Structures are given as structure tokens and as C-alpha cells.
Image (cartoon, rainbow, N blue to C red; front, side):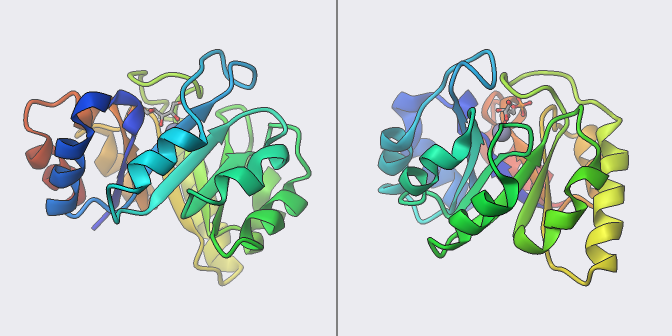
Length: 214
Ligand code: DX5
Ligand code: ZN
């Protein structure tokens, strides 16, 4: 059974309480919080105060996806509201030091790769990662089309995680829906991020159950 991390980027923020209740009742595993700075990606979203506010209203762990330049500058700030904190390999920070910085706060670390990055480029960092995130769209916006090339990357990472004897989870993010989710799970993804498909659906509870049953 796959874990589900719905992306709050597609949420109606004024109906957050209702959404969190539905997520809790239907066993959502994590809440995916997309942080964008208008530099690393051509879009802006929210930061620590919004995540802290959501966290106060739910026990669901916060899965924070930083899409910001030189993320090491903000790790200590986001550590206060994240349960899993991830940043991009391509974002200009020292990868090893930043992963260690995250773990030093007693929270889980995640390293994320854009579609242009090869999985082999992060193999050496896997022992420092509780999770790796494979982007299956160009980061920046919800509602984009799934890139099937990302499946090969999930397979390669799964094989390497096994070879190194690690328990690192693989998360996939972008364009996940009822057609693409089974492909991602078959390739080895453990955690599915879904924004527009879950939050844009008429029956959020049914859609959560559908994805989680894969
Ligand atoms: C894109 C974000 C995603 C996005 C996913 O940069 O990282 O988490 O919200 O949205 P969907 O599921 O609509 O592709
Ligand atoms: Zn994301």
C-alpha cells in the first residue's frame, strides 16, 4: 500500500479545517508543503508561519518541500515546523552538510532531484537521506503532466537503496493521478504526492482512499 502526501498548494486555505479532518479520517500519511521563493522556481508560495499554523491543527506529519535557492540558510527556521524536510540537490547548498544539518534537529531528511538530474548523482548521499524525492514535473506549479522518464529514476534509486542496505523512502511528486500512481508504485515509489488530483476532486475522501489502496 502506497503512502499519500497530498500537496496543500492546491488547497482552499479557508476550508483547511475541513480538509484536515477528511485527511485524518482517511489515513493520509503526510502533508506535502511546497515552499517556493520565486528564484529557484518561477513561482512563490508560503513559508514557516503558514506551515506552523497548519501544524497546530493536525497530527499529520509535515512533509516540507523547499524549492528555494541556497536552502541551508533556512534549514534551522523550517526545522521548527517540519517532520520531514527536503531541499533540492540543484539549489546551491553543500548537500552533505545540509542533510546533516536537517538531521541535527532530530527530524527526517529528504533530498530532491529535478527532471534534469540523474539518480546516480545522489547515490553517495543516500545514507544521509530518510527519503529521496523524484520530481515527475518541473518544480514550480501544480497541475502539470507527469513525465514518464521519472519512472526509470525511481527504479534506479530503488535498486541502489537496496544495494546499500538502506531503508530510505522514495517519494514522487507531480502529475500523480489514478493512471500514473500505479506506474509510480510499480517502479518502487513508497510515497505519492498528489495535489490537483486529490484536492480538485469532488469527493476528496474517495480519492484519498483510491490512491492509498494502490
Ligand atoms: C510542484 C510541486 C508539487 C505540486 C504537485 O512544484 O512540488 O508538489 O503541488 O501538484 P500536482 O499533483 O497537481 O502535479
Ligand atoms: Zn512538491
